[in-house]
Image (cartoon, rainbow, N blue to C red; front, top):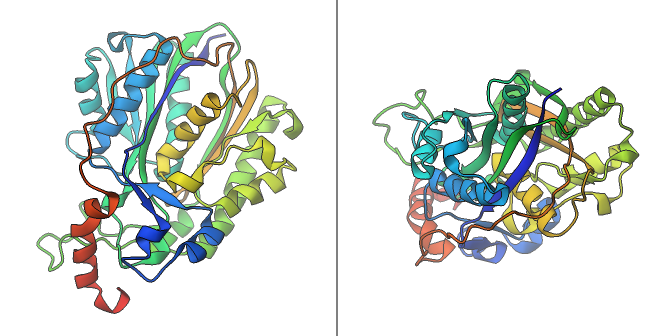
Length: 362
C-alpha cells in the first residue's frame, strides 16, 4: 500500500503584531474583555499578500524536506482569502517557486481548509496520480474585518503554514479522516457581501459585513469536531489515550478545552498557540503543527489528531501517524520584505473607513 508521508513543514507569520491593548485604542474593548473569552492576546497583520505568505511557508517546507520545487506534482492552497480569484492564488505560488510541472488549485473550506486539503492530497498520492504534493493553509483575514465590531475584529489574524507530502511504503501520514458540512446553519458564520454576490458600485464599497453568532458557532463546533474525531479514531482502531498530541484548529481556547475534555485528554497533550496569533483560519493547523515540531512535542512514529470547524459550516478531523524524522533536512533563510509600519498603522485606513461607515458602533 502507498502512504502519503509528511516530509517537510514550514510556517510564515508576518512581523506586525496587533495586541489587545492596541485594539483598545480603536474600539470599546480591552485585554480584560478579550483574553478570558477567547484566549487571544495578539494577532498578526500582514503587509504582503496571501500568496506571499503562502510562498514563504512553502519554501520553508521544501527546504525542510530537502526537496526542489521542480519536483512537485501538485500544489493545493487552502484559503478563504486569496489575493485574486481569477487566476487562483496557487498559480502565483507555483510561479514564485518555479514549480512548473505542478498542477495547482485553491480549496476553500474556510477554517477546515487545511484538513480538507490534506485529505485530498493524500488521496492523490495514494492513488498514484501524484508523488509529491505541497499543501498550504494561508489567510489574510484582517483585510475583511469590520474594525468597528469587536465581536469579530478581535478574533482573526494573518499567517500561513505548509507541509510536503510524498509517496512512501512506510505506514505514516494521514491514516484516517472524516470531512463534512453542516450547511443548514451556514448563515451563522458568513461574509455575505464578499464574492460575485456583492453589489457593484455600492455606496460603501470597502466595508464587509461579517455575520458571527458566537454561541451557536461554539455549540456546533464542539459537536462537529467531537463527532469527527470519534469517527477517525474508530476508523483507525486507535483509542483516544493512544493519541500522543492533539493539534486542533485555533479558534477559541474554550472550544479547544471542551474538545479535550470530550476526549478525556489532559491539556498537556493539546497544542495551543492561539494566544499570540488569534484565528488564522486555514493556517491555524499547519502553523500549530510546525510549532509543535519546533518545541519537540512531536516524536517519531507518534499519533497526531487534528480537528477543525469553519464557515459553511465545514468540519473535519484527521489522524496522522508521524514518520521517523522530526527535524528539518535543511532550513530556508529567506524572510518577508521588511515591514516599515506597526500593525495599527497597517490597518489605520481600514479603521477610519469602518468607523465612518458605522459611527454608532465605533
